[in-house]
Length: 265
Image: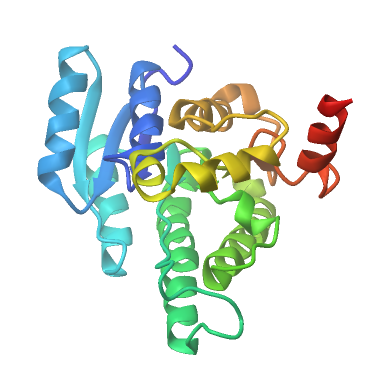
């Protein structure tokens, strides 16, 4: 098992990408703490994974209550004596209000930045001192391809994820001498329930037209990348920004049109 007996905290971990990360960690032998706001949803996951022989517990975290970032780390350390892995998975944006530079209210812009960047800063700050005392650890930030490829909307979300990418490098630099690594995983379009329920088929088809690997990622695809950064296999890797997006944003901007033209020949 790649994470045997390591203690891991995963935020926003009861559904989607966060749930896949937590489940993968647990199946690889980690003692996983689901940091979330909804204890009922967490308990359902705990019950299922416990039956599989996994070690999974719940710790309260409300992404909009700053004090709960420190308390979730302190509670975990109090119970386990240490924390080895922190996954900062929380991210938010209201696409009805987080629009383009012309239309987004400044307060909404700041709200998105404060929530997303603050979640990484506060949780990492709380964990680093404990990791240092224990000889090291690994922090993995879940960013987004939207933090490296500009979009026509969601200016707050894109800016916050770009900031998280750089914050990842800063944490990696400033915590390295304590043997603490920090890396980021940037998902592309991923087939979570939220995506499948809120994006039309036409939009999905249009987006995938410009994705070299022409399919959505799965939460499990993202979880496997995070697992690498959490494991000792990446013990000499820090400050890296890994896009897991099927190649979206990599080729020429007219990639999709050129492929269609080529196929018509």
